[in-house]
Each structure stands twice: as C-alpha cells, then as structure tokens.
Length: 212
Image 1 (cartoon, rainbow, N blue to C red):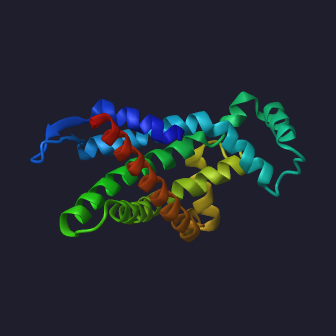
Image 2 (image 1 turned 90 degrees about the horizontal axis):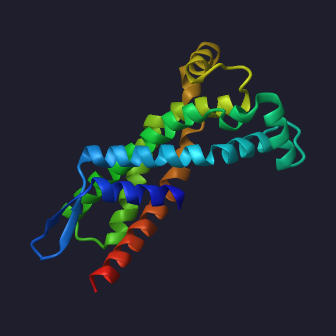
C-alpha cells in the first residue's frame, strides 16, 4: 500500500495527458518516467520499512536466539546502534529500486503489446504482463537480493554491499549470487501480478467514478 501510494503520486506528477479518439483523456508516461517512478517509489518505501525488515530477518534467522521481536530490537540497538536497523538498506535499495523500475517498464511494455495484438480482457492482460515483468526483473536483480540477505544476517562480516559481493564470489563462486532465484521468481511473479491487477482495477474504478 505504501509503495503503490507513492508510485501513484509520482506517476501523476510525471505523466502527460492526451485526448484519445474515443474522446476520453489518456494518461501517458515515457519509458524513462516508468523506470524512474517505479525505482523512486520503491526506494522510499524500502527506507521506511527497513527497520521492520531487519527485525524480521534477524528474528527468524537460526544464527540468533531471540525470544521476541523486542529482544531482537534491543540487541540490534545495543550492538550496532540506530544504524543497525538499516543494515543492508543500500543493497536493498540497489536491488529493489532497479527491480521496481524495470518491473514498471517491462509491465507497461508487455501490457501495450498484449492489448495491441490480442483481444483479451484487461484483468487477464494485466495479470499476464505482471508475470512476465516480474520474471524478467527478478532475474536481473537477484544478485542484489543475495548480497542484501548476507548483509542483514552477518553485518559484522561485511563492510558494505561491494565487499560482501566480492567476498561471496571469492569464497563461493559467482553462482551464489543467484541462490534462491527460482523460488524468488515464482513468488514475485504471482504476488506482483496479483498486486498490479488489483491496483489497475482500483485505479480504473476510481477514474470511472471521477468521470461520472
């Protein structure tokens, strides 16, 4: 909800409007605008949610014996200070911002292609576009996800995202950057497609009510 709220505002601010042949106003965004707004919205949302993400990862990890979220929060603050709650944010932003930007770009291009060549219902086209966009964007950004997870689990072992990536490749080989790709791709494809299908439908209904 936070991401889509920010995205909607950014898209409104960067879009242009034209009058279609049917007499209805159409909102247009360039490929650059789709890429930039998706990336910016995700980076902002990621910063806000970083403390929650760090707590979740540390609490669920077998590397720590936390009995509650509050004990995890106290230990993180005691050991790393306030910055501990933002461990891995750089890697998260480097992963999520490009992912979101690429996703929006691929999604809009796929949707335009499907609508242009196939006579199918909008929800089906939106869902199909979401699956394709998620698969492509996930494959490109998975290395950043692998690095981010290491930084959050073992912040004392790595100085930053760059040193973590170098050390991972040296110790385990380049393929370790693609650990979990299949699972992440499947999860992202379904969740992103569903979220965007619902988002598009809500936007459509809101615009219909405004036009009435």
